[in-house]
Image 1 (cartoon, rainbow, N blue to C red):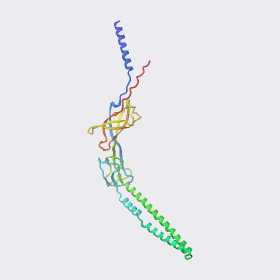
Image 2 (cartoon, rainbow, N blue to C red):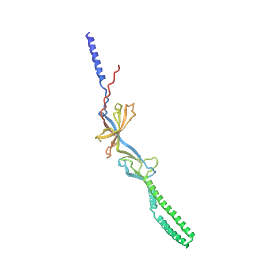
Image 3 (cartoon, one colour):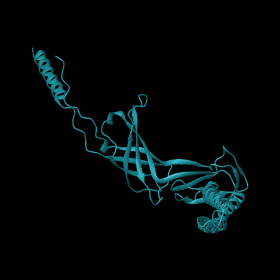
Image 4 (cartoon, rainbow, N blue to C red):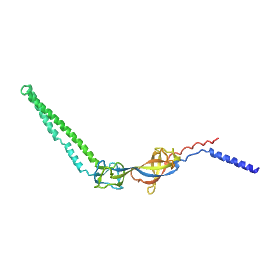
Length: 291
């Protein structure tokens, strides 16, 4: 009898404990309380080339040099193009042809005016008047042609400047020279880049987060990024990408953050830790027990 009573009491206690556990709400862990491993990478890597082929005349930078957008990094051999541009500029600034034709046209118009006056007085013949008129019209066309030739010369100057500009290498990003692939004197063909640049004025932080945290992050969220030593410190980054395709095999999803680096002080290619600044998620409602 005593054993039966003890068994009954233990059974009641087990039922009450199970009921208390099931009645407690289930919660998901907060992502703001967990620090994740991450990697700091360049925003982008650029294989710098030229739209034209030719022999490299000079390179002004080397591996490790910091560059700014628009900075001249080197140039291809351009002596022929520079000479062609100088010739085009000389033609575009030549005013003598137009001035000469214009002076002759003014003379012929005055001559036509005098003959017209003499013709009205029956002193000059109609043939002489028509001849003067024809001469004036021919010179008018010559003047228009000279003006057109000058405009075409100006267009040739613009074309020459663009051709010469294509021989100059300029940095498209704020960053650092990662590699110099060719050296002065080498021939650059259609397939060969000259320099490799890494954009680091904005760094890219890549992190993989467990799927249990999915839904707690959105673009625009802030995070504290702590680079590994010897860099150290804490920096504020902004979430720019939250993957919508999860990795079933690893049980994670990718998150990308943008880390400002205007002074180019932080390097890329270093490990880090990231702590997301988001409010804790609400508790999930209790699971309903089956009846």
